[in-house]
Length: 74
Image (cartoon, rainbow, N blue to C red):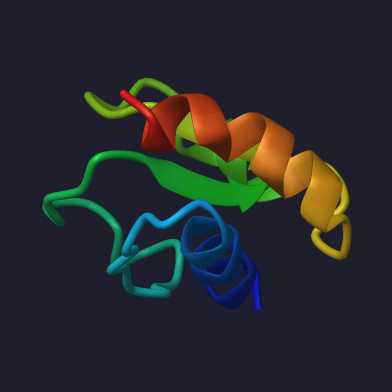
């Protein structure tokens, strides 16, 4: 669901998003520009070499957009 929201936001801004939804045990070793996760999961994956975006309300497209757009426009 979060990945679909991020893809929709990217499309809205003319940015093509490719991504993969993985479980907590599978994210390590994957190459990516950033990781987006619920705030509870994000706390468990802090310290990675990529930015971790913590989303408090997974249903809030405005929160997701506000938090990921700075990373998408880099």
